[in-house]
Length: 478
Image (cartoon, rainbow, N blue to C red; front, side):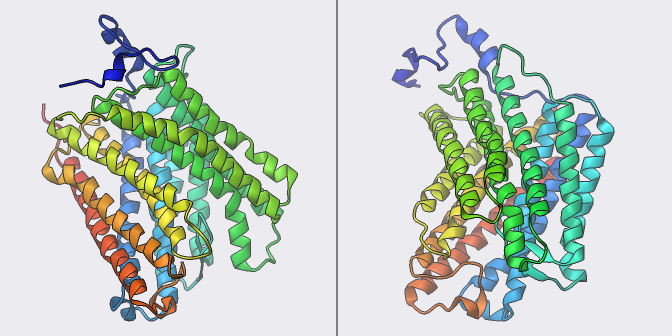
């Protein structure tokens, strides 16, 4: 095997390992998190279980979503509100609940044992809120509001579920801040990952404050579509930092787990995470300087997201890509980790590139955020594969596990390409059925590719759930 010829070159600020120092460096710079051997393991599995159930439920709603937008099949769903109701629940389960439940698992894993009562209270509130949101469409007719970041069904049942879930996450953040493990003055690889997780947790706490601030500042007499858009705009922007920080931690952890050597020291990684956190801490300035309803408030928050993301994501993504070259043969249990990591990098990058192509309100916008969101999801799927054997379950090492990230990622790539294709011809977002008004052959072909890709992605998602459930039923082989 030929190593990268530049790997021996000393570069200031990055990891340089030679000769006898390799063993010492591996212990200091291996980006890994220890697994608790106490009661926290049960809580970690509880949060992972909540996230997996949310993914499974969102997948059921996604089948209806894809069918309601696919040419020929869309006529089976003549009521546009059906699409919107399903979309609200699907988005909240597959993004809000799945991402934050996964964050809850990692924050529990990286913290201490303190305040276990608060920890279980947080989980109980979040789980109850998720259940109420799932059943809300079937017990109460409510108007779907397609607000960015957190769409809602404007009815007491769904909103009660959302508030309960939010209360659970708020208690989770409070407990996590009270039980954070010290990083130490000498930052190791594990310390850098814990710092990144703490930064994501702080970003989530600031998002909760932003939601509350917007809710207090806005009059309830506004049109519901405007009201919910403004309520969730500020906190939703901050949540993107939390999601991104979780993804970056997952990228680095997965790369290290498969034996890749990142050309970044733990101090540099922690510094990059701190830059993203700086953008989070600047968020209150947008509230103090401008009214929540002002254009300037929106623009300043967008600038903060571009600043933090633009400075942090590219160097870490390039470092991870560099560490993966050249490709090395891996044992069966590590192949799903590498496949998840590569698929995540590709999808997130595609979503970012599509973001520069957006003009107007069309389906290029969901293509952008589907790419980014699925990039985060794939990284989380890879870490689930990594955690299972460490938590005492069987390692997903089958061919299906190795192919699952590729199937899911390829389907999502087809999905977003179809959306970009159709968006170029003006197909509008957040509509379905006859409301799409597909006039040209190109529009029909683009949305058809979207539908086919979506169905393939659903198969990949089902594969993930089945693989994880099989692993949970089998104890780890000794």
